[in-house]
Image (tube, rainbow, N blue to C red; front, top):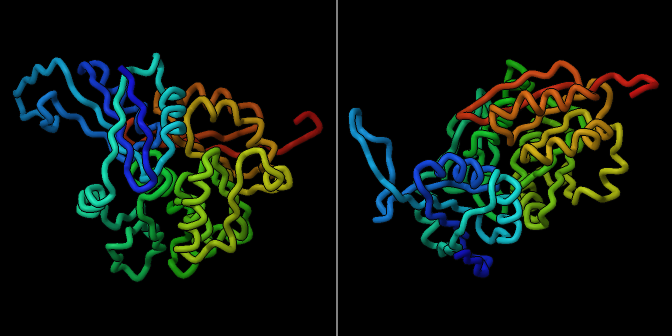
Length: 320
């Protein structure tokens, strides 16, 4: 039986599925695609399902798959994303609410400052970065998905780090003078990274008002609120930015990426850079084929079965 109780603003929602072993990969992919901060597998006795020892054979017939979502996240939004990412009808589930104090204790013991390449770091407020050559983004899990721990976010952060100059003194000018759009901003992690790398203007877009609230707060915490604007997709801010965007980053789901191609193309300058993630590696070919209209020189990289695709906006002529 499906249960969908209300989640209060100071609790961390969890979706729990009873599953057979064959369902686990699908449910893991679905939960992460829907924005889960973590996914835990337990057997029916609540023991964690860890990697088996060499030669060990385990015969569990029933498992629990539990996805943990950000504090105060909208249950309606979570379920909408789950249904969009699930290739079959959404299985029965239960909603559990993890009290804030329990999550804080568990999370602080695991979430540490992490480097994504040479210079870009994500650092929670209870930790610090010792390196003097670091672009540090201060971020705690809050109202929206995006702490850098999911492979799709990590791919985007590594991509941003890879375009930085060799000399650290120049890193803050990596995106100098550029207009950047972070489409599906979540916590604002990629928008903040772009601003810290020198972007003159960053437009952070999301369908969830909670994500926009989280982005504004995280931008303020990182001292870049003056360069980051937040908006819903159908607002005047985006309409006025048409043809002006130098870098479009979209870490969202595969189906929306397909639908948004003409919108991205319309926002971007000739030869501007597109970076999209949020898709599985086996979805890359279809996405790259779809983006042959309006985009050139596509290439991709992957991490843990997830992928990032980079391409450039085609130089327009009278026919494009």
